Length: 267
Ligand code: DGL
View (cartoon, rainbow, N blue to C red):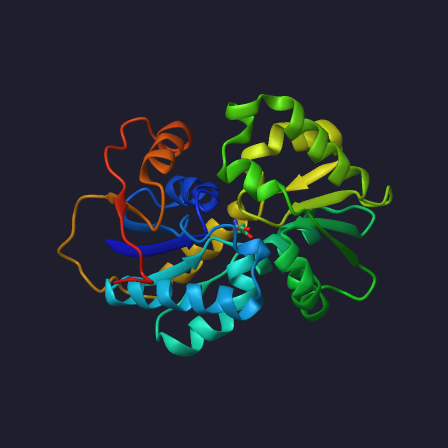
């Protein structure tokens, strides 16, 4: 059975995990949520890269067959560095997201909402310019407060009014010719109902294509440990375990029993 390492700055990567579980139900998964250091989206690139490299090392030493960076900000800052440091396949979420959007758009104008750090790194534009045909365009819109809304559970704590107003404000900044919007932060699909109230054209969640990409990559390699026969998912976070557990039970599976705490910056 394959052993898959997945990480994000918090609960956002659970949106990717959910799709992965649909495509590859029989696997051993270690999910690391760095919620003690979230949001990544407000940090400088080097800091994000250093945090991600520590998580990459942790998962690599757990002997995973493959690592999924289930975080756009982390992918932009560290995909290259993690690939250079650890000799196993590493997948990010940005390229799959762009591929899915290129398939979806009809008028070739794509938009992406993402964290301020991703916007500053031109996370999508850089990859887009390499893989998209010339006649396609992409515009990036940094959304400072959207990840904290999800990570801090604002909707539950304060009701939907603030969330609604903020999302409306961010969507209002998307040019009207954009017919396809990529959710360029893995926390955003959790708010897809509200987002789709204000953006009524095509919405792309890169998680689906990322799960397909993972499947393709796994077909090319052999599992390192063939003795494991029972599918498992282990959840580890660097910060609040209780909040994470409640969220994971709601979003992934109500029977999740345990979230472990491990701060890689201390240990
Ligand atoms: N979920 C992450 C992403 O996809 C990071 C959000 C954050 O921590 O700011 O970009």
